[in-house]
Image (cartoon, rainbow, N blue to C red):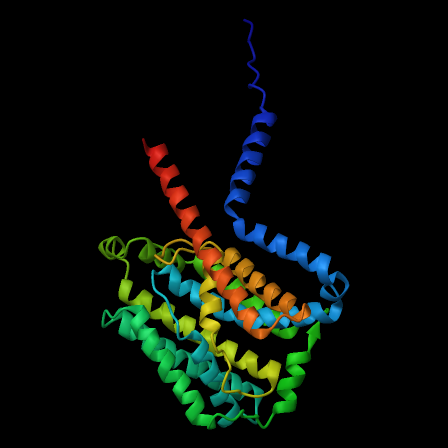
Length: 341
């Protein structure tokens, strides 16, 4: 009795490689933020190459993006739920000046604790009003913006507050590990934490579900109210951390700390691909958006551009980011409807 052996069909490596290449190309097409960043780096290299890529400027650039980077992460998780927090800049300023002036001033660790408590209280208040009272996030955080900024000026009478441990704060702000500033490492640790929570936990899946369709999420048994509250609390803690990092970098709590930072945070989130309607956005995109704004601010300073024109450039970039995000969303929606047919 003879037996016949069947050989498995050959694996079409060409087709696999083609599909992977096609997927990579499709992914790159949606990463317009990377294109903007690449263009900015080319411009920086052409105009101020030796200075821009120098070790001193790279350190300053990392320090610039570390503080706003933490605030962008706070804005991201709020936007993912379909909300918005325009109080993040004022909350950071309040956390910084209170941490510098209260008993946290003589101790860096106590200062960190005070900043986290201040940020957590602000976030919990915002979250309670949004989640439990059903108020609009924009209105709630607009009121908190005015309240926190008013307390910043009232607490220090418009004068910078220097903590008792100013030298220790300054040393931390200048500390580098393997050539990377400590504050940048803190930011990267926060990035890793938020990425883990969003992509590897039930909490993260709930956040995306709420942003996609709140009522559907509630009907499926997701604790929408508790999850929303936790999002705003976590955002407040991140902002408080940003306030402490501000103290470490500048060794004082200034009345202008965090001023207009909410606009940059929103723009960085949007230019990174997040939708303000919620349910769509990635940590990677938020990081790219953060780097873009830091590079722009750094490059404009190196080119000796007027401060007023710098604000105009930022405003123009925000408009470009919103336009690109809208075009991409409409295109995706059209593609989805076309494939459904």
